[in-house]
Image 1 (cartoon, helix red, strand yellow):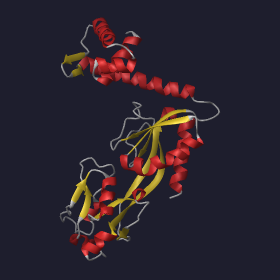
Image 2 (cartoon, rainbow, N blue to C red):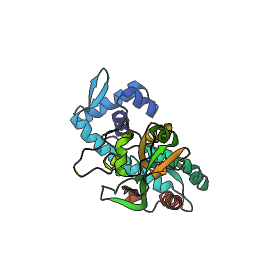
Image 3 (cartoon, rainbow, N blue to C red):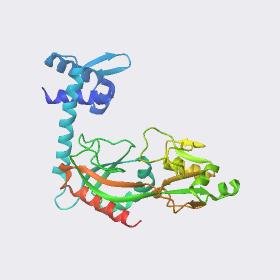
Image 4 (cartoon, helix red, strand yellow):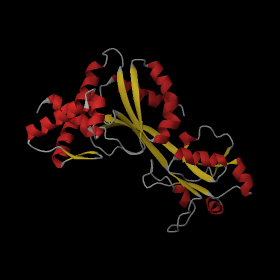
Length: 295
């Protein structure tokens, strides 16, 4: 199989159209189409179903794309390791973590890191689902749970606790402040409303103080964003629980039920075994450990 044709095939499979792949490869739509037709002829199998709305991989195309993606991922990793300076960290680092942690905690600290290591550049991918590090969807990840893939190197970054808050305005309007978990029955709650939460036990507040087997409380507001929950709390809508990294600025907010037993979030820094000796991975890991230790 011709390498150039496989490169074009990979671009088309990822883009879903000849036109978009051509833009990526700086080729015309007709040139891309000819390369795909030539590859299909050489293999004697159709690789795409063509229809008005775009291209869909055939079963054979899916099989080929899985292999090609793996090859390209390995090549990208090898290229990064070969071009990294022997004397200092260099190159692009693709980092993934949850949306709320990336926006609220990580992004504000990246200026310090990138100023400290000017030869390192970064791509930050915020996603509440786990990207596949083995397939090089990212180089490293900050995860809010132990890694599920056995072939990843992991480093514990410590734990984060949840904290319960209401705004001063809400408590004035409500007329009372909950002193026991059971008192939450008399208040409006703000809960996370998604079947795929970014962390486990995200709605533990709904059951706090309830007897075993009792129905959980419902929320006056359910929203699929921890940051939006915090904004709603600050606006005076009700009581909510957020991870402590979101609550660095508590202006206008009151922490409630500090003695309540709350779940914890275990954080991990994970990366593929192939990047164990990468300098840019090592200095970023050390930077995270230092910054988290300052909390």
